[in-house]
Amino acid sequence: DLTEKVLYTEDIAATDFDAIYTFELYEGETLVQTLTYSINSYANAKQNSANATMAELAKALYRYGVSAEAYLNK
Image (cartoon, rainbow, N blue to C red; front, side, top):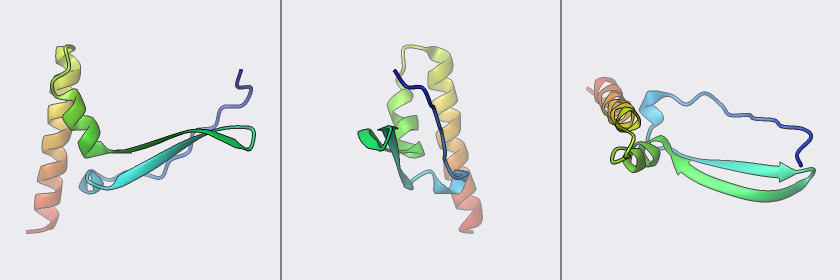
């Protein structure tokens, strides 16, 4: 039973889609779970989703990240 729920993340830019982020879940002051992920890995995992809307959203997210990075690096 979690009585206090706090979610904090810094802004994640489309050009940072390869950056690795670590999310930590605490119960009180005790770390109970850690998740390490990147936007790119999330999009790749969801591109083959049985949910067609989720798959299309993931593909669009991936293409947007690639195009934003290409634009900044030209």
